[in-house]
Amino acid sequence: MGAAVCFGCAGIAFGPAFALVLFTVVAEPLRVIVLVAGAFFWLVSLLLASLIWFVSVRLSDREDAKLQYGLLIFGAAVSVLLQEAFRFAYFKLLKKADEGLATISEDGRSPISLRQMAYVSGLSFGIISGVFSVINILADSIGPGIVGIQGDSPYYFITSAFLTMALVLLHTFWGVIFFDACERRRYWRLGLVVASHLLTSGLTFLNPWYEASLVPIFIITLCTGLWAFFTAGGSFRNILKCLSCKQEDDSRVMMYSALQVPFED
Image (cartoon, rainbow, N blue to C red; front, side, top):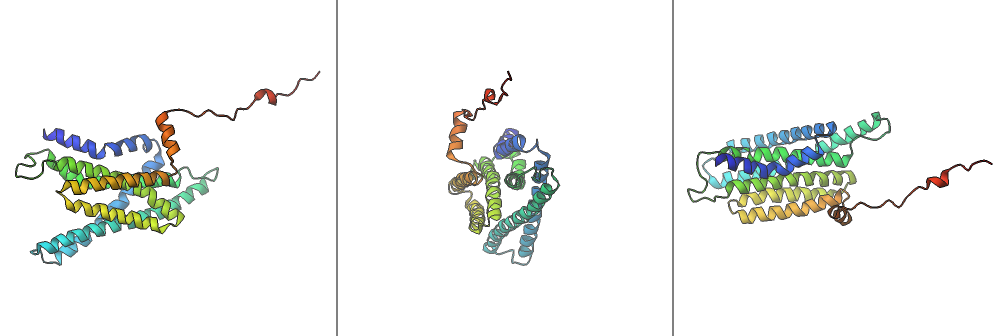
């Protein structure tokens, strides 16, 4: 039973991310490089946030429960701000790399667009963030023990899996919006991305009141996904075209007979 819970929750948490990597990333070497490098940037931000939180706890009164809870919220906020700071640093690095690739290419264009790098970098942030947030929970789900036997919620594991899935998707969407905002110098969008990230992290402190955290986070995920879709150039027309599975007829037909050289007499 424990193994079934572990693999089921892992499938919920990382199933969409695995599908995105499998169908949109692994076939392109440059996208794989962007994916791995993005995970490294996120890990560095986590390291710095952990150091700040560790030092603050060491310098504080450990017997004060309210103070320790406040430091935990402070650590989460610092972690979010550092993640977004390193996302910006990664944007600057990829921007330089994009210019360099365009310089050495034969046609003067980069083999990977900035929007593609934004999507892959956001996906990498989401995957590595999800791994670190749920790996210990998955390890505990194998057993021994039964969740809820002491009166706690029996939905702890599956709720954590859905929260991780939402976090992975949110990072992907935030990456697309963040890079576009940096490219177009629309700083109010950067503020909205950081604010939604802080709000999402803050909602997790409402657990184990899962109705108050899971539902708003998925609403934020849906709204952010639509925002990222339109930011990337999507439209309702494209959605309808995709759902109808119809191909547009190309009206630009070349009449080869009109291009034939007339026969000489």
